[in-house]
Image (tube, rainbow, N blue to C red; front, side, top):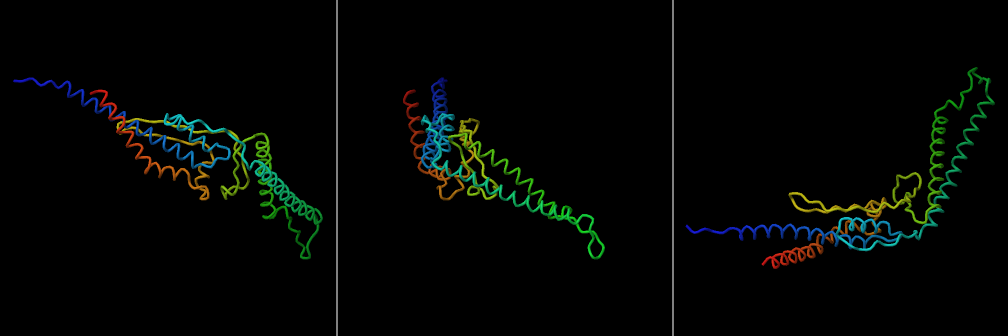
Length: 251
């Protein structure tokens, strides 16, 4: 009976499996690099923080060597600081009006202390009425917000570059805030039995707000769609390039 040497056949199968894994990784890296380049190009660049979040994530994942952009002070820095100052002025005026009304009510109570109405009943004390209690509660809230506004203004004045959030970004906000720390981005490529996958996270807090603003073009969603279309052509070419190179080297 003739003996069949399967060693070369098994080696060929092993090579094909390894080529597939290497090509899969090359595809993920190509797609990730394409996405990073695309979303960076589409992201508005005022301070460069949002764009750098994507670049840093891509660099950490190993899918791009793109250089980080210089961090800049916002072109609207002076406008934002003026807005914070105006919020403080308006809040102080509101607090002043509320305090005056409460003090007026207390003064009326003091005038009528011990006096009786025509029906013999004592005058109701304004300090015990619901509106008075509600206004006291709102006054405490406004004072806390005023304190926070002063803190936000101090942070803004002490930083060359910061991110500003007001009601234009989120209608639920009762006062404007600033973010001074640079959060950047993180990225990685994970492998399991189903293959490789890439995770890119932009940690800058204003990225989601940029994405929700229709005037800014939805850079993330647009980059994802472009990666799914044009990006896959790049990935396909990369897959065949790696596969051909490995097979030729083993021939």
